[in-house]
Amino acid sequence: MVSKSQIKLITALHQKKYRQQQRRFIAEGVKVIGELLAAGWTLEHLYLTNDDFADVPAPKRTLVSDAELQKMSALTTANTCLAVFHFANEKPVMETGLLVALDDIRDPGNLGTIIRLCDWFGISQLVCSQETAELYNPKVVQATMGSMARVAVNYVNLPEFLQQTKLPVFGTFMDGENIYRRELPASGIIVLGNEANGISTGVEALCSDRIAIPRFGEIQQTESLNVATATAIILSEFRRR
Image 1: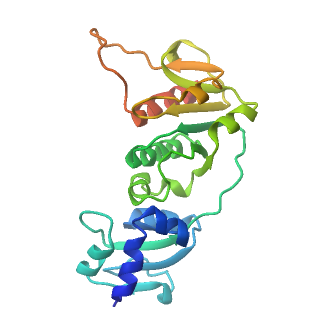
Image 2: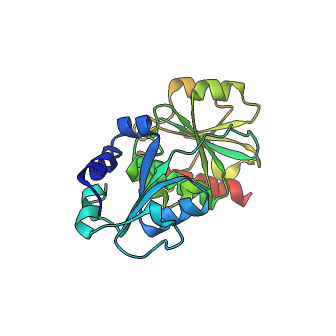
Image 3: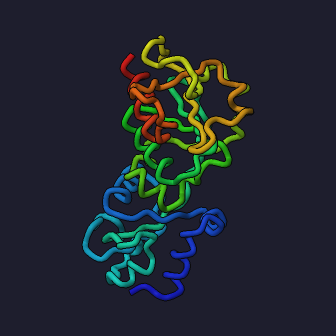
């Protein structure tokens, strides 16, 4: 059984204010929870409707009804399990290899997908501006499908960070150099900008290289690519070289 007060505490974690206060967040579904447990994230408590995760100690597991889980869930239709985890401790950014930097990415689904892409392409570090969507938003957590367990995400003053780096900074722009025609290094920072406005003026000034994915359509009227789609193409091209 789960009490009304417990449900209230869990549903409060749907809101950023309470997540930040409690330094806790929710994750839902066997895959996401399993990935976080395997990576050693600190579990507060697990609520489930079946006998999954039998290896989790009994004091940290509570069997609940479908209706109770639905009350706690941030999903339209609840999964079979929900866990409360502690925030991870931020690790210092290691400026080696390829890093991805996000300048004011607002859509949680985009952030979650970009984290999955970083995981797929072996990018272990993601640097985000303070205005970028929050890692622990339930929609972000869900969209990562567990990849947040393997990609370190740091929130920084992005202009300050780029100003001090010794790595080349590749900004993605509509009028940049064709990414398919230029040499690409094994190390550098790839900057992706806001869904509507692109890379901000302050960050643009700190980009040492301007790259673009060319349009091949005959009419050339498509305004832009979805930022997560663009990330997939750009990371694939960097890794291909």
